[in-house]
Length: 128
Length: 203
Image (cartoon, rainbow over all chains, first blue to last red; front, side):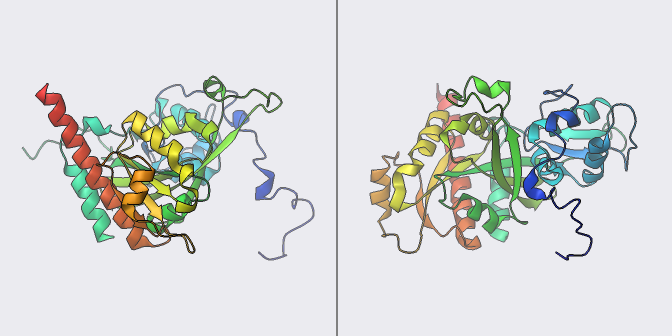
């Protein structure tokens, strides 16, 4: 919010300018992940404290591992890194293929064994 | 019996179960407001870029010059417990984004259809969609200032709803009111599921 540091050089790339790097450039042209489906609410956690960039592991992969030190959904990762969900799915596929992240796909409602999840949600909401 | 978890790979963390509820309705009816009223953080925004997989569904005729379409979805999170996380997704308002709806509705435990009595027809497409998919839903009439108050049975009749579909008044800006809508939805979804199980086992 301060004027300090706002040189004319970088004023043109504000939030409204959109991503400076095109989404498909981040995935090197790939539209689909090498492995996994990644629902919007699939939960992801990193299996390591950090990774370093190497062949096939770019800065966005590193950022995801950093973010997923806490459990995050695919939608949250996309929102925090300001990248489209499709891009995040490709990057997560790379990480899952190297076992750098652990993923839990959501259960379907029909697959739930009993009403315990419904009851837990109702009680949890009431306690908010 | 206490050794049940020992077959988990070393270092693996048990991840919670995630469930999702959709908040649908016409443009400007208060979907993001309701998501924000009950979520533990400000609503987040995620974007889906329309790719080839959506082209067959999304009618792009007349807009050939436009090669990509971006659909924004607002969502929020409620951590129920260490093993249970609830996500609320506001659905994109426009009909041409049905392909996103399909992805959102897949696995959704239920939906809230927000209605504005001044523009009741705006919520028809959402109701048709969830009826067609068999997704349990409730209709929450958002009480805007200045809107004429209708009785709930009048709204129910105007929307031609099944008698079993709950209709309730709400104020999407208020946490308590939005919580009540979600609790009503969860109770309805639980009943719907039980009824379907009974019907399936009775055959």
